[in-house]
Image (tube, rainbow, N blue to C red):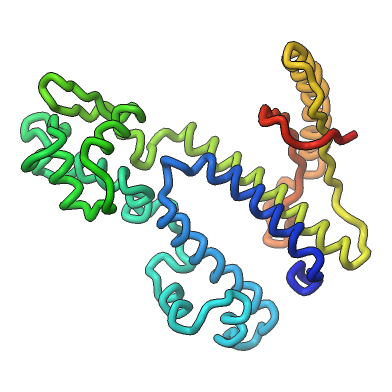
Length: 293
């Protein structure tokens, strides 16, 4: 039984609140790095993909009915067809350069500044200094040629690039110099690894939460899932608490890792199951939440 089938009307408010809380935390990370338009595009793709995957389990010997897909997604046939015909539908999207460089309007502008021959020095191949307004090379020209969103001035973009550390702005000469391509997809493997590990950990935790919600409705034993916190920790004692807690968690980590390696098989097989555990420390300085013990 899926969560969708077992969900009762009185549970909708709790689910909505939980989704909002999760999205709010995720969006804090995305603001400035991913546009709302790109997030909407990605959500639509993933939502329909997951709905189709669920229907394939329910209709294993035939193509999932379009009407059932419409029921699960709440979309008419026309937008559904548009999503399913998208080049990125059911494809690996992360490494796709065109998908990545359009994450934000600023990213698209910076990509053009750093790749368009008109904006590159012919000798060094590096991006040329540009002015805020006027003909190329300028931010104003970049906005027009990259299909930039309306209602934003070239000066606002210059300020954002300066504040974000992507460019320096010499107001005397009126020019900007690209100093880092930080808004473009990073080639830093450590950063990419940290993002992958972090979001994989979030995904595993969400899997456990959803599994327990389903099993709660079915009256089955739930997976181990615990979280303890208090909103009454004195600021001057936070570091001491963190230090002691990390010491305790490190001990458990060593024991857990040993147990995990003891159970791990030397030979790889398609029938094997991925299983493990996660440990993390968190702080919330917003002053919200209640004590848990």
